[in-house]
Length: 141
Image 1 (cartoon, rainbow, N blue to C red):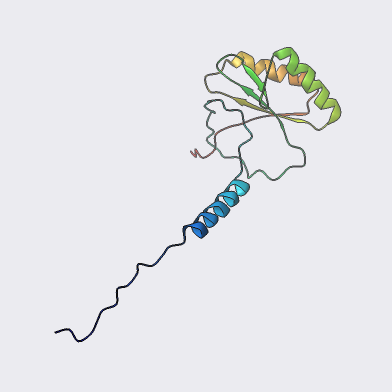
Image 2: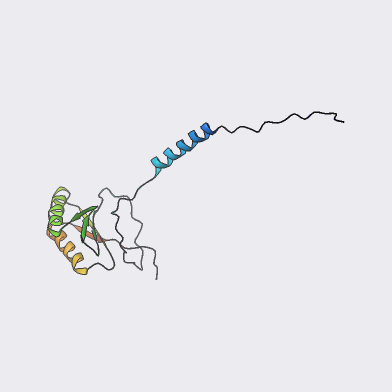
């Protein structure tokens, strides 16, 4: 004996189209808000400092970054591979355009010290006012 009849329920329908729209909006949002590093894709090991520098503030005068690596080409000006002669002409031009130019040297731990000395010598000949070195932070005595 059956007193009540059960109605067959249909499974709830998931609207896939709206889920895809939401996924695309999230993907576009993440692509727009992502920041990218502006460093060359080189594997270098920066030397570590025992004392961390003070927090660097936002500067109106961004440094000129020169990277010294352990393999050919030895020198990079920003992302561009350069020779020592090309580096000297570029630094001279930039120092004339900006008299308060700052040079930042990123050198691998295993890089030849002579190449770092050559870069500082070229910077002094180009009359760059300030020369700094990038160090890995976070090591405290």
